[in-house]
Image 1 (spheres, rainbow, N blue to C red):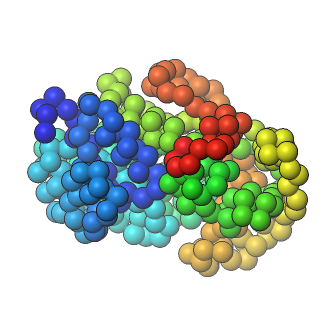
Image 2: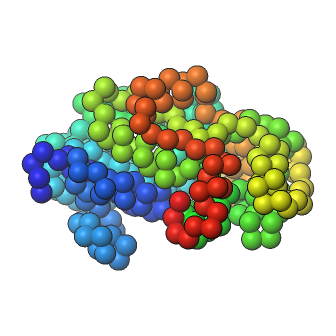
Image 3: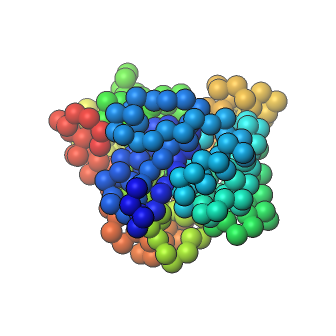
Length: 315
């Protein structure tokens, strides 16, 4: 490995992490290693070193020291207490590491400063770890990446690594329908996953110093507005139904004890949406865009639909 390159360690890489991995591999400033519970042909076919781990402190620390990693990026998507346990191990490994003094926990939420407990299952997993970071990071620099909804959910599944979430996202491309949460006029944010990944790579190279929360966004708006964009682009009306806000709130209130059931989590995402908590703060986002992401492109939905039209593969 070239001594002049930073080594970036990616842990629990899923859909989002593949975008980051691709952009890191294409950037001669970085080497990439993956920390995983098992081996995956996607990485081996790209000659990415895989270090099998149980995500414990000792295991992760050994890998960080062996590879001389400088930054640990987590893509661990768990919505129970394991999220906290494993991220505490990641943090303690960075603290004890000889070289790895930067950590990006797995987040990808909305305006967490105004709505720290939305969606609610983030309030019981991400929010407690956010508080741990504030008091126990001990020399480890960290930031939380927040982007609102992934814009990829507007695209056919073959166009992105992101897996469709038809029970959570209002637009269902398979049956060409929209189940709008609330009035459809609640403020939202959307960002293309690949462009979130490029922002992460820019932060890996940054020397200005990270802020505790980093916001990125491709488009602000409402679901009523973007449904019109979809209808215009495809020249095809989308049948719509609307779920009243009170129905969403009543369902969540009645099922708080079942918050690990996927169907309940999906409605908690509805609540996240109708609360306007997916909308990242525009002033902060644009300030950080100028500070960190001057060379990054953030696309609108119409631009993304145009890029994807007639193109096979990943946007």
